[in-house]
Image (cartoon, rainbow, N blue to C red; front, side, top):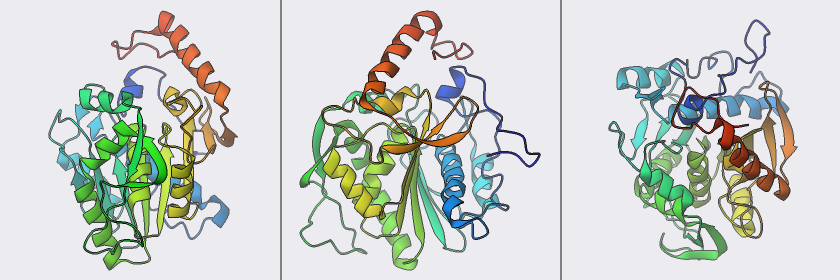
Length: 321
């Protein structure tokens, strides 16, 4: 989003540090007052961009870091207060250097909307890395019904398969570890705010978890905004997500992000929304669609780039093109 001076976006240097971590200094939800979530003053056709900006900040804030250092609570919590949220409910273990699935659920103080955001892959979290590589397809878990939300016709428990929907095993297992709390937070909010939008988001691994979570949620009024999402499941799963969200699915992709090309599309995995929004080298956003051949091109480019720019342990070195 251009700043108030009319200049284009100020992009971060193209180094490994900013692939692994958020910037050290960043003002989350800085434009919340000028561009509120519901964006009533913005033309309807462009409101998805306002919500996408909220989602991007929410996804980055889920890492809970200022660069590599953990963000202390006295810095983390005020970002929500300034943006009009109540104190967020943390999901998973947020102690420094904790492993496994993490996220938060933030509700607006006026109850008009909520955001569920999952953390992406952490560089030093071996559980995240094992989650990412466990790409064996498995039956999708049945959508669990909490006591506050009766099950849909024909549904039963979280450990049963759903029709022909098949998904990435690692992502599904990671969500299972926190689903009981996530399910309760979602349904408690929905029972008290039946018309409010709940936006599901995350970056990278977090985007995959958000995609699975929105398909389990039965309460309606959900939208899905993903940033740099890998593919999560097969066509029946993708069709189910579209139905679950009423088609409110928005996928944003950095033009050089390898993660969006895996798992390889053929013959099984698909993006929920093949038509995404590509972010180019200048930060401009435009509609775009990746074809299957681009998966292999991206893998080859990264592999060859690693030969000359592969110092991924040196955070200040340039990342491969």
